[in-house]
Length: 520
Ligand code: GLU
Image 1 (cartoon, protein in one colour):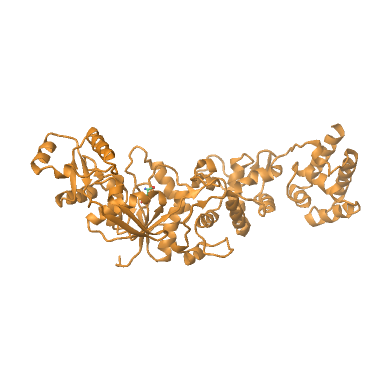
Image 2: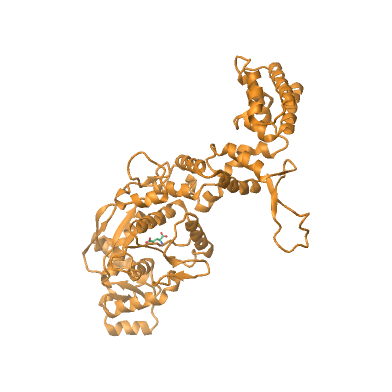
């Protein structure tokens, strides 16, 4: 590690799935490290034994990898493997390191044992309130004699370890987003607790030690941690650690400007993945939460973002999460992506919704065959027929331009995967169209279809338009045709649908629509 190397870290507590807000913190650290050609470290802050869970840790790593936010050092997999020279990178494995620093501070008289009970502390605060002083621990136990302290420890009295603070000192730091920030030690509660009786560290101590020992140069995190910063600086100052730069990012807010939560639809990253948002679109969207390089442009590749990224372009006010913008960006990325890839990504959604089932060549490969049976296509469960990849490809391509996320494919294109579709009779009428006229038009279409030789979109379109254009309003023919085939108010165009569905299904659906009207 060279002296100037920039080192940043993402330090999640594995107490929940990775959500948009924390992914944004990870992303900004990642961008900064890539821009500065530094190192990006993943540290797991699992000091809260009750709430920390392996499944959350796994989800965090999986989601970061899905977003392509690869880290250079830290915990690398759920088996506990790690990479880097400053480990362990899980706080739960760093007990000995914390103990060493606590002992060092005790030896130097920069920390001390405090035996005050809850009642003692309450009494001290009460007196301070009466004197109109801010409540703070002013070091009563710091003044205990060595003999008395030893005696109390021997007697097994309960204690905590507190850091000795300089009185009325101003702690100042430079925040890359907000400029100079300062705190007076009297406002942070006086000599604060850094460890419990068993020398297990409190959160701020563990965090400060880790940042110092892992040689973190820039701490980029949410502004909800700003009140921790003076305490962490005081701990590091007591140990003579070099100063580092801070950047406290404003919180991510919901559209109602309150802190983003599940209520705003701000689900975990894996939920966005399941809904069919593309990782590159989410990355682009999250980047724009509180950062913009200026100008109108909204779509940026990761490489462009890395090149343009700077902490000074981060806004100071909260970043508002706008799902419509995410949908817009995701739609742009879906459009840009290779259709084949989109089809492959849509198929699992269709399988999940019960429209398709992969089919295997079981005839050629009987059950006794030991290897993996090759997939030969898909079985459309609601049409009770095989569907080739090519057919699915055609259907998905019709919607590539319209999807906001890939999980919409089932809802948008269900009529291709169902044998029978249903609709209200009135939906077949164009504007104030009449039943008789609609039946007549559908019968005409059916007749044209019965005579078409080459079942191809161009041919279908030519024949139908020739007839439809005879009407003043060609919608009179095209609307009932489209509804008869799709059952929907909005769908792909009638010629695309007809060509994709095939002549038999098309004729069957038209006859059914005519019957519905005649019988209704
Ligand atoms: N573990 C903290 C959290 O998940 C982050 C602490 C930090 O970045 O300093 O909110």
